[in-house]
Image (cartoon, helix red, strand yellow):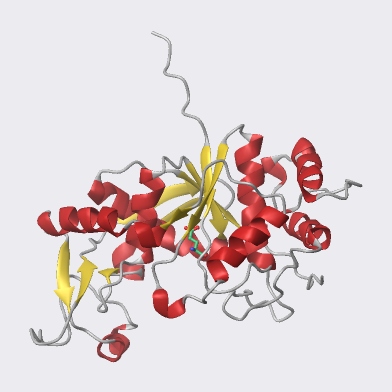
Length: 296
Ligand code: GLU
């Protein structure tokens, strides 16, 4: 019997609207776009707007219009996590009904003596039914192993690293881990390409996928853009927002960061990206950050 046809590649870029698009997130956007297009696949945009305290008003619209100005056009309308609470509630109920979750009133201060990690479903603080609780996922003492398409083989023992992690926050907000795995599966994402700061979330996401009976996509973690001191640039610090009125300098820097040659003389970003795609080889992606400080 002939093997089933390979499923079509579906990738995504999933920014959080905590500030304008900066060089670090542009690298992720361009990297995920190039890999998806190289495989003849779809590229989607998902706005991860489930954390109102961290959200900057107007940032979501700003990020979407900046992506457009950079020629990064998604194949489907953007999905907003703030619209998808019902899906997260269904996944939450499944985990709770399976006995995977427990309510927890431990504060950061309570967990500080344990390195901030909650383990074995055992709360440090006595339960106080008069106060709202967070919900955590019980994590077993098992190694989660997977191979990152760029960073190579990975193994993580969840009990040692993340412990019983939060699925629903004390304020009632859904955790990034839950929303991300529900949406990656719901959107049919076959490959996740994102910044290396999220490598440490991947074992948690694999474990959640197992508990929810969801498929695991492939993962590829791109190097982060660092400042002169070797620190990661963060959107919250609003470092180097890219200029939608002048996309080419930032696109050149993003390609340099990824290790992709850019000899294009094109003046329009769509054409420039198209030329980069024509010579793009995923095998030549940089695995670690550039050590010099890029400047715009
Ligand atoms: N929303 C996350 C961020 O902006 C990315 C999540 C992901 O790609 O899984 O850092």
